[in-house]
View 1 (tube, rainbow, N blue to C red):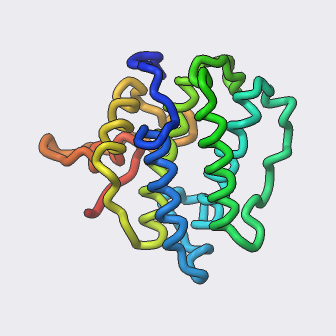
View 2: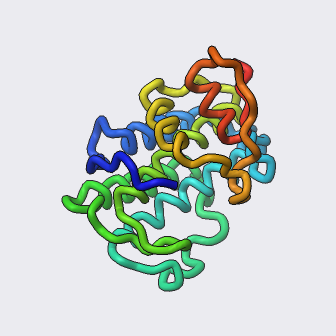
View 3: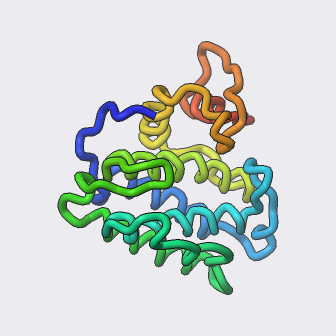
Length: 198
């Protein structure tokens, strides 16, 4: 992953991160009680597992921005984080993360990630891209709102353009071929081994 194009994007309203939080949250609120165990394009995750993963990611944000290491946080956010009210668990985790990013200078901090130290801006952009991709995964899992906001698709495409084949990381399947005239969302999904039918 490259360190290009870091123009101090923040987490304020109207920025990619805040928009990505909103997009994922919109889809969380569409989940019906009988859909939590439904499969998603992430073959090892149900709808509930997927939402739990994104709650986990947002809960890490305040800790890491305060300088904590992976070892110091330990297993605090392991296991089920959704309880009996998954939508509220998501809303609270997302708001805590949003507030942490809203602190002036957050993107300029050094963050201690599992693979080494990086800038807050780089971490923020990674989180945003993950939210975009998983918003589609969740939408597919529940059969609603599978068309993502165009600006978020363009943002994520810009990030993935410099990543190359990420299948070796174990996080994504191998990229899929697409036609030369494929729309941006189809191209984005194909880069992560996902095929859009719409």
